[in-house]
Figure 1 (tube, rainbow, N blue to C red):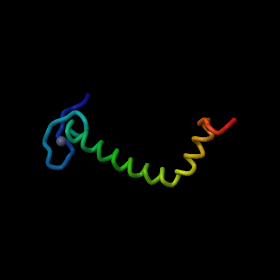
Figure 2: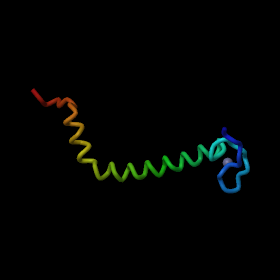
Figure 3: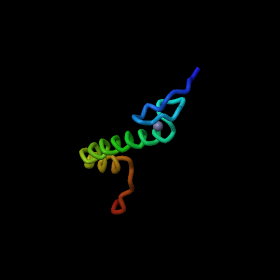
Length: 66
Ligand SMILES: [Zn+2]
């Protein structure tokens, strides 16, 4: 059975059922997604050419094709 406990965020004493209170749950989630987005940006940059090739292979219509 879940128990109320203090938010795990330093300096926050809001009671919550999850690790963080709602405010800090959103804050921590936003930070994680920001880090993931940066990592994805790096991966996308490395794979940019491959991604373009994949788009062609996926059947993007070529206007110049007969
Ligand atoms: Zn909190």
